Image (cartoon, rainbow, N blue to C red; front, side, top):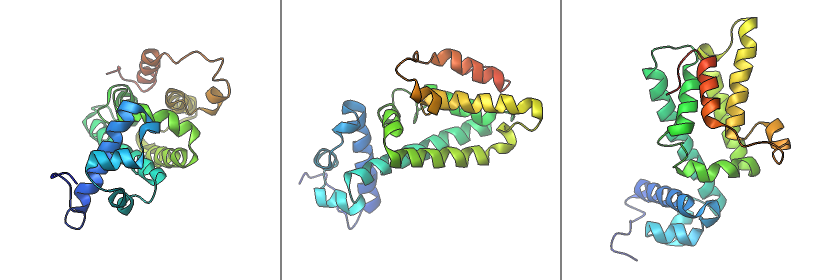
Length: 199
């Protein structure tokens, strides 16, 4: 074992963090299919048994990575919502900006590798759906449409988010015929709908 290996009994949180970080690096370089128990354990400097102590299976490791990314996204979005001078639509703006340019969630992050797997993997899709429902509920006061005339606007914002993520069921059904989304235009439309300018 390398000299920099972790001692599980003394540093369990550091071992877990290293496993997640190395799994994210591998996902960035090789896609989700590159995440193997052997590759992650070797990169983190632990045995496969050490990995299994923290994650019971490869699927549990991928789910842990996804949950970790969602926690980072939460922090990024919460900071943006707090800093937004205009409360109305602040979650939607923060979410779209995080997806386009975010440190945890943008195109040059492990999320790019995991985002396509969300569409096909039931357990990750469930994690994603639960996360999104909880965020929409938490931010209902700022992003929900209170008046009848605003309800259509709220539906359009939610649909824009789903379409951007590739999780809109109508988009998936016609994915072969659909054009790739114009993300810049979508970002501008969401910003306009929420009464702000795109970041």
